[in-house]
Length: 348
Figure 1: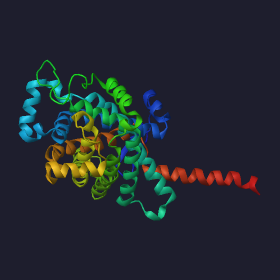
Figure 2 (figure 1 turned 120 degrees about the horizontal axis):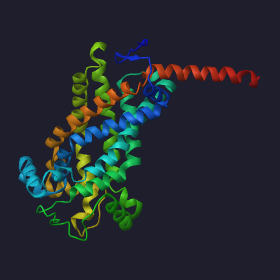
Figure 3 (figure 1 turned 90 degrees about the horizontal axis):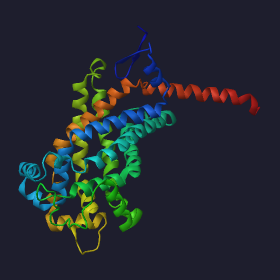
Figure 4 (figure 1 turned 30 degrees about the horizontal axis):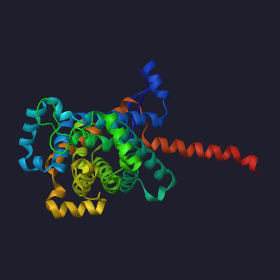
């Protein structure tokens, strides 16, 4: 067997004896490894919690589901749409979350290293995780938001019978036949602005949520003894609490975003409203409690989703042999010094 190399931060050991597959992994750029690890983590987590996500969106956007409660909503979907009803819109959701999570985690690592390397005076504690997490969340949202919009519109469609007749607001001319149809019709109706409708509250929400999520996760991990940091149950616990706390502070903006995304589908003759207008409208029509509509089910979704996401991501980093952050920063500093030394004689 090859020599063991210790990851001082997470207590993970790597074997330097490489196979052909490991040789391919070793030759991959660091950012590519982080993209793959993040994409796999997002796809796995999103698929597991898809049924809860469907019910949550209906809770946020349809009063008929909000009024009958959680268990009755599950029974209604099961009765009228069957098992696949819980995964309506999940194709668009996974298509969105894989690139989103890939960009999110990769950008976080890039921002984190950039801050550590260029601004060492800020330290390397959870506050830096808060900043890097916020920036990475905003970056990922801007690149993937149209997919989130399409996912919400598809999930908003509700059928009345197993024959898949679209009910109430979704008349036959408004029903979307799939991801491509939803994309093309949204773009045809409102252009690029239509594909980014609701992006403002998304950014307002993702900056604090993403930052707090990474902050709480890294903060909790920093208090775990090194020998236990690679324990899967510890990672799940840290991720669960991180997702729970981060979502609680930012949930009302998620409700506003969903309402903005489906305003055109609700058949309202009133003028489309912006973030503030939608927030006021919800409070006036439904009361301030509606800003937290579906929060209980969101807890059921977020806790496993964030926990699974972080755990799968850390596991994939080990599988792909992603080096410790500290080691990469040292290599960056070494390369910078070597570059300066090489260019010095020519500049004299």
